[in-house]
Length: 415
Image (tube, rainbow, N blue to C red; front, side, top):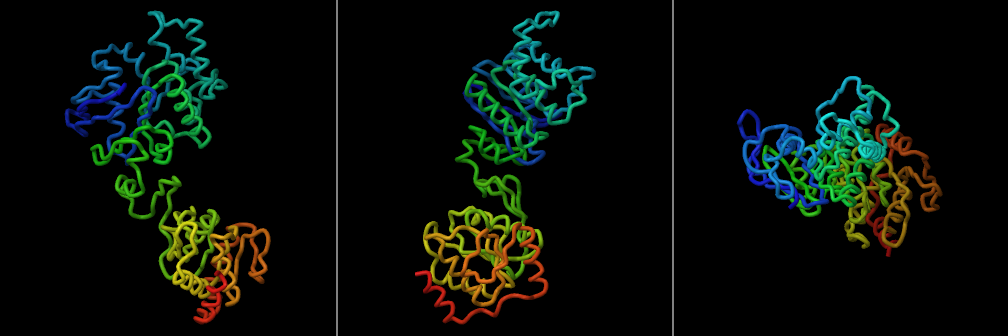
């Protein structure tokens, strides 16, 4: 490993917070610490960079012990962007970034032409060149973060340490930051050690993730091998709602109770309908869900009842029978507008059976399906969900569950 810790112990006032930390990353790799607030991520980073005295162990870069380096020598090897609010009075952004060249200047701190070129290149790299003449104290938090990153890059370090660098950035600048770090590791062999709150970003960026929980290293390894939905729940103690690692999304708990609305999903079109109904406190059932469909993952937390089928396979006859009965007994059926094909044709029969039973069909389809008869078309999910809520509150819905013969006819139609 190019950068590593061996038996590192960190804490405050000589009281260890986390002991025996053995982590590392190769040259050109990215190591990311993730975990709940107060778990010790920042303490580890501050101890690595000597902003906080470590209580034991060794931190090395390229085999060299950081404790044996002078401050100036350390600054040539490691650059740091911490969460501390930096407020340099009367300094322009150019001057703040130029301070990153301190380890390379003479006693008078004068910048050479090469130094100035590196400053300009670093600011350009993070899209901050237009801020060069602005006072640093006048910037937004996101702009300050970009300028501080430019200063860190300006040092031309071998390792860059960042504590929650995306905290104040909007989506665009988060993406740009991640791309910058990835390109720097690929082009210059820069090693990156950082902490993040966004688990989904960590899975996309990091080569190694270190999970910190309850003042201990909970797991460590490649994100593909270490992280899954169960581990995330344990790491953050999630009880109400879920975090879906595949989608990188948080889902709140669905409404409890017997479902009064039935949603016909597919192609991810069901998810916006699920969330709209959940926000209105309406319990719903959904089906038929192919297990490979993104709607299946989203519905796991939000739906009161689900009817599923194996990927690219028809549902079991009992599942289809139960789904048709549920749809026909609902206050309304929501048609998300997903395309109907060979692998989900049972959903067409389900819609047909509900329409036959007199259940109001609320659809988002651009083009009406003949089998849906007098289905009501909506241009927005919000308008559709509002109408579903009205039907539920007034108790106006379809007929009672269809006869077994009617269900059998609907099932036979899918053969």
